[in-house]
Length: 170
Image 1 (spheres, rainbow, N blue to C red):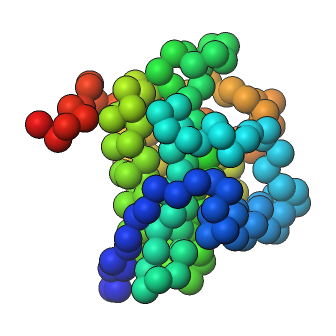
Image 2 (image 1 turned 45 degrees about the vertical axis):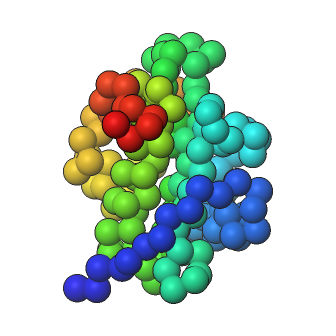
């Protein structure tokens, strides 16, 4: 099977490549769920050190993205040190090649370097591949939070991050 070589670049959420991928993701949500993801957020929430966004490139084309934002001020089950994963997406023609796993690992590493303690996310029951990815990566079910906490098809997962990772690589 073709294992894509992916170049991951930290990229502002409002960069044209990131914006184009988010448009494709929203179209996927409309097709899958009948509507867009209406979770409120601002591009500034994905700027280090309180957030992060990455775009994955294959042969110069933007084919994947994902980000996280700090969720320190929110009520339980969220807690200080949480990083919420948002906008994970791989262009359909590139799915099944390990790209989403690479993006997820990059998000986790960036969050740990920024001092985040736990990754949290919401996905939907109509996204079995996403659920499979998260479970395989060590995510476990958690209590609902956020915009879709009362939505029947929503699924929530979390994963504790390793302790402090030295910022100087040593």
